[in-house]
Length: 210
Image (cartoon, rainbow, N blue to C red):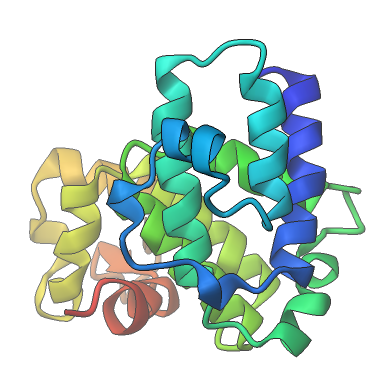
């Protein structure tokens, strides 16, 4: 995704998240296609959809179909945040220290996600942040994990409490360590590899529940 396109979508995503009526997004996301958006004006009241339509007039790539699906699943899961809380959502997400643009970061993450299932997890994580269940730092750490870990390894976190990280298959353990879900304790009382309990709890209790 080009830088100009990213910035345009970033601005419209912020507007969509903060001022649109997200709960009106239907449950039949899988039936929404680019053709239906272009021809029927489906979801036309959402600024991010309007921006996408403008971009697609110059030509539609295969990746655009995947991006639309992931975006809608993300927005659908985010819709549990009340309109009042969504007004300040983006400001709370931004990191003033590094002057990072939250909308632009979200677009970049959504674009890189492998599947719609991951987009739903990201939307759930945003809802947790918007409803004050997790902090700014925890949201971005969780989004990093969702982006980088294979879905099978994310789902396996449901049983982390009953799993000794030292006994986890080496490749999977390396992945968990690389995204901050565990570390190696170097002291006299060390038990070796240990879980990052707070992050594991977020996935277990809120993101991958049945």
